[in-house]
Length: 160
Length: 173
Image (cartoon, rainbow over all chains, first blue to last red; front, side, top):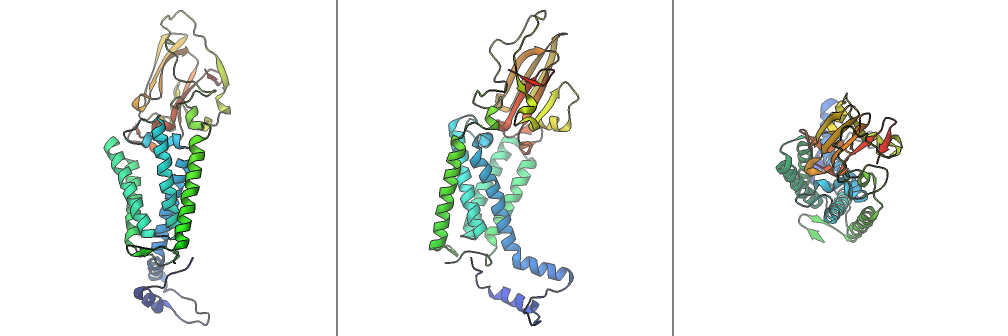
């Protein structure tokens, strides 16, 4: 895994923060400014990895025990084999998207697909049960996915 | 290969293919595995042992002078879902039990001093219970994942069920 060459803006930011001490280590400015600088440099990676972890958690549990999740399948009867099959297929998609996000393979594309999946889930839950903690939670995750789509990913991504 | 502003190389494609194969293998394994805890519940689709299945037809006892008989199985405490079973009758009902009851219709009546009739209906009609038990029995609602309960509603009844035990804590068949 390689780090893509940083864009001009990032290079300028790093140059501003770099104080040569012989070891060449970057020293951040004291206080909040330093924290914001670190956030600017690593927030894209953090958001992508967190989203990937959330997806792989749900994907793994759906894959290993699909019967427990059939109640979330809209329209289809919960006890049917079709519902289990749909849950298993959903799990496969989640796991592949999670791997793509965690390893930085087409991360923005993967995040866009994840956002679409989550939008479907949010709409389905809202239509069947109205606004609830569940809807709010999934809306938050969808927001995270949309954010990852918009953030250029330059660190810790797989390149050709 | 270029996909919009992003690129993917052979290594990336290979990893995605392996991830997909792994996910499919895991899903096939999970799909065809023997019924887990979820399927052992009354709301599940299998009739595995150890837990009260859907109520027998005609089990409702209308004669209050007849002693209700029942067969019992293993202790509830020995079951894998024991920690997810919440006592809902007799009271008091804990806050966790109240949350587990989200989306359920639950009613207990006493046709006689020795018997109690339990009616319990889950979201969408499953799980379903309408049966008479000896007065000392206890009713538990099983909720494997409380994260799907909100606004006094259960969004996923596949992980819900019920268990009735006798006075000694053994599951009533």
